[in-house]
Length: 409
Image 1 (cartoon, rainbow, N blue to C red):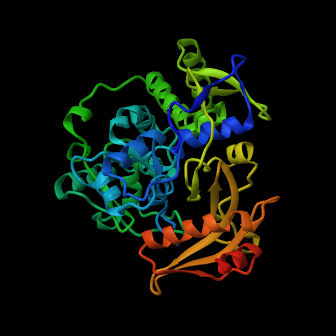
Image 2: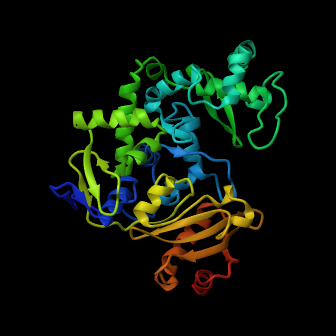
Image 3: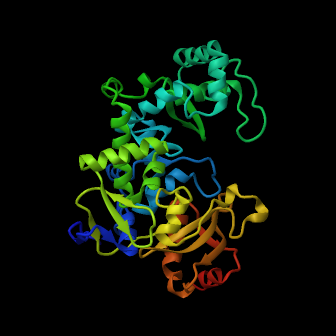
C-alpha cells in the first residue's frame, strides 16, 4: 500500500526519469495500490471518477461496456448498478457530454463545458450532419425540442416524423441529427440510457437548479480549469497530452497553458527520453513505487492517447475492433495487462454470456517478458473479472505461449 507521504519531491532542476513519470501517471490515474477485497462505496467510486475527470463511453460490448471497466481496474469488483445510479438516479452525480469523446463527467464540471455548447450553436467543432440540419431545417429541430419538452425523455427512435436512418455506421435519421444538435449545444442533456441508446431530456429536469443557474465561466477560465484537471489526471503530461484529454483546440490549449504557467497553476519539467516539454501541477511529489495490477479497457484514460502510451510505457497499442479483420494481429478486444508499473502483456477477451464463460481468445507477453513471471497475477485478474461479470469460469482458447502457461495454473 502506498502512503501519501511515501514520496520524494521532484528534483530542483525540474527533470524526472521515465520511471518516475510512469509512477506519477499511475498514481494520478488512481493506480496507487492494489484494490482491496471490500467492494468500494459509491463515495469512493465518485472520488475516483473525479480524480480522473471522466469515463469514456463506447458501444462495443463484446466483454462489457467500456465505461464500467476503469473503476473495476482501480477499485476491484463493484456493483455496476452503483455506477448507473450515479448517472441516472436523482440527484445525479454524473452527466453525459462530449468530454474526451462521449463521456460521463462529474456533474459539478458542467459549467466548464458551456463554452463548447456555445461554439456548437455557432457551428464550430460539431459534426456536419447535425449542424447542417439545424441550419437548413430550424423549424424541425425546434419541433423535436418541443416533443422532448412535452413528452419527457425520448430516444431517437421515438421522435415523431424523425425519418429513417440512412447509410451505414453513422447513418443517422433526421430525428437523431436533431437530438444530437440539441445535445451538443446544451439545449438537451442525457437522462440515461435505454440499453445503450441515449435518452434525451431537458437540462432543467436533470441538472440541479443551483448548478444550472450557476454563472457561466468565460471560455478562457473554463479551459484553464479543464487543463488543470487534465494535469491532475496525467501526473505529468506534454501540451498534446493535456489538450487531448478534454479535446481542447490546439491554439486555445497553447494560450491557456502559457497563462497557467504565468499564474503558477502549472510547472514545466523535462522527462527522460521525451522530446517535447512536459507539465505538472506545482509542488510535484513523486511516489516511490507502484503496486498497480489491472486489466485495462481499450478506452481507459491511462492508455487512450496512443502516442503517450508508447512514450510512457514503450507499449504500441491500437484499437483492434476498429481495424479491418485481416490487419488484426492479436485479436478483437485486446486488453493490456498492467503489473508493477509496467504494461507487460495483452489478452483478447470475450464474454460468452450464454455459457457463462470468460473466453481468452488471445494472449501475448511483451518483449523481454517471460510468461512465468506474470501468469499467476494475470490468472488472478482473469478470475476476478469473470466473477465480477457474473461468469462462472475462465476458458483459455488461445494457443500462444502465454495461453499455455495460463492453462497450467
